Amino acid sequence: MMGKVIGIVLGICALVAGVSMYYLQVYGFYEDVTPQPGLDVVLTPLDGTEPRPIPYGDFQAIDAESSPIRYRACFTTDVIPEDLASEFATSDLNVPRNAPGWFDCFDAAEIGTALKEGSATAFLSVKNISYGVDRIAVIGADGRGFVWHELNNCGEQIYNGSAIVTEACPPRPESE
Image (cartoon, rainbow, N blue to C red; front, side, top):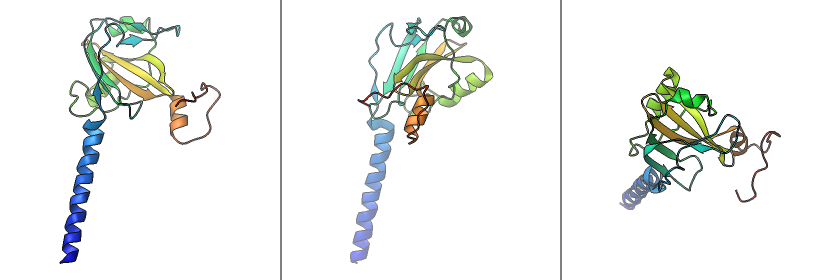
């Protein structure tokens, strides 16, 4: 009899722990980002100077302080990607990270397909928005745009547990 009680208690604890972990990963840490008109969608010019805003609307974004790569955003624009490519730096970091299912404007599979088919273009929004993390913006021919954070080469070297970082990486800030 005592074994059954212990088994039931362990089962309930495992269930509560599993549900709690799921909730924290999918919902718990995310917060809506407060839009900052004119500052939310920026692209880095080809000459590497300060990122500049582009016209956009219908902006919505989520982020979490628990990780520098949890940022996701969606927007619309009437700017044509081909016109932007002649003025702004494109990015080869064009495999979008998945967003939580409840943030339904951001479909990583659809964005990835559009990038592969050439109906969308990935741009460097901000280099090292956080140490080793770049902000990538994708703009589709249909006027829909998406933003996410991606580890750059320096970030991959630092966050993979390697103590070796190439000289091309800036020194890591002490506060991080």
